[in-house]
Amino acid sequence: LKSTGSEFHGFLTDTYTTLEPTTDRVMATALTARWRWREVPADPDAAYDDVRSLLVSRFGGVHSLALQQTLWEMGRALLEARDDIGEVRFAAPNKHHFRADLEPFGLSNPGEVFWAADRPYGLIEVEARRDGEQVGEQIAAAWQWLPTFV
Image (cartoon, rainbow, N blue to C red; front, top):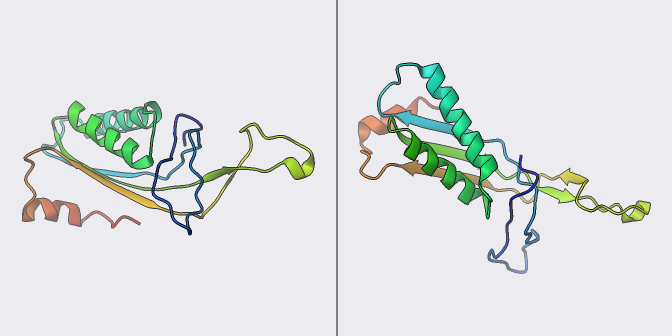
């Protein structure tokens, strides 16, 4: 969850659009991140900790124009930092938070109280792969043992 440093506006709208554009929002998700090693690291636990730290740092450090952009920046940073990773895949549902209307109670809400909604909903999936990285049967088989994104 990021409580600031995230916007979402300028998207296509129609008569059925209910999501309001915003220049400051809560951005929340339940991130699933999976990556494929090009070579097995000597210390898998330390490598995992390094990858996790880098991803968390980029999630928090990127001024987000959209969840898609943040995930792309996370994947790009990971591939730049670790030559031993060939590709990374993310699945991240949008968990929207809306400002609570406290006026019926005679209170103002200057962006302090929010409620989590299950609508509108979006599942964002991003895949970042190195230029020239092979995508053949062997690589496809390497991903098959992983659970399907939910």
